[in-house]
Image (cartoon, rainbow, N blue to C red):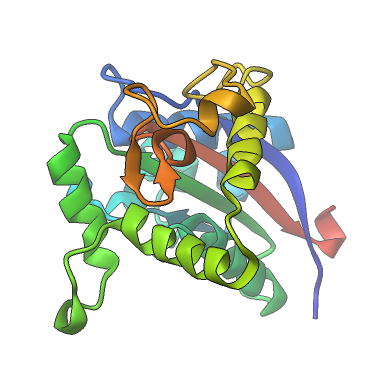
Length: 228
C-alpha cells in the first residue's frame, strides 16, 4: 500500500467570524495549504471535505465551494464526509485511501464549519442530528459526554480536579495560538469551582469543559510516495 505524506497545510482563525461565509473559510484554508505545498491547484486530483452538518448553513453541498478558488480545480471530484466530531479525520482517511488505491496522487483535504450564524438553540438542534432518532432521549453533546464522565467517576472516584487540570491546560495552550477562538488563561481553581462564570452545563461538566460555538477551517495537501 502506498504511503501518504502531508506536504502543505493551511488554517484560518477560529472564532465568531461574522464577515466570513463557509465558502470564504474553505477557500482561505485551501489556498494557504496549496501555496504552502508549493503546487498548482490543477495538480490536485481529488478533494475531500469534512463538514459535520450542512443544517447549520444554507449550502447543502459545501464540498463544491472550494472549486471557486481556482479554475484549475474545475471538474475535480469533490466529496463531503460527515462523522460528527470526527468529520475531519474521516476526510483525512478518505484522502489517504484514495492515494493508497492509486486513484489519486495528490489530494486536498479540508475541514470547515460555520456555526455562529445560528443561535445556541439552532446549533444544539443541528448537532443533535447525530443521534439515532428512534432512540433519541433529548440529550445534547454535553449530556452525552457527561454520561461518559459519570461512568468514569463511578469506576475511579471523583475526578473533578483532573478535569479542571485538563481544561486549564487546554486554555493555556490556546493563549499560545494566535488562531484560537478563546485566548484567555483559566486557572485550575477557576475550572474546578462552580460559579456564575463557570456553571454546570451537564454534571459533572462545567462551562470550562465545553467547546465554543465557532467558525473556522483547516486544510492539508497529501501526496503519494513518488511526489513527497
